[in-house]
Length: 115
Image (cartoon, rainbow, N blue to C red):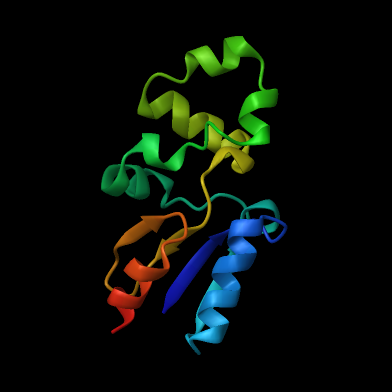
């Protein structure tokens, strides 16, 4: 089963959900705000790197105190921040049936994975 992680109000998550629906692909949706950040966060960071998971371009990051931003220099600090502020996780995170993790929307890559 495909699991799509994100926040329902995020435009990229909306686009991703619509893509799966249009391609008639079943998926589970995990809402970071309601269901929390999963314990798999460390596994994701090992697979794709904590830098890929951290959204430094988003509003949540920009609103953080500069001292908080400055502390995010390694995986433990980045993962702690992601647990405290799930909105700093780049979205969507997709866990594929083979266990692979992708971050962000990439229709071409997704189509290849599903073919």
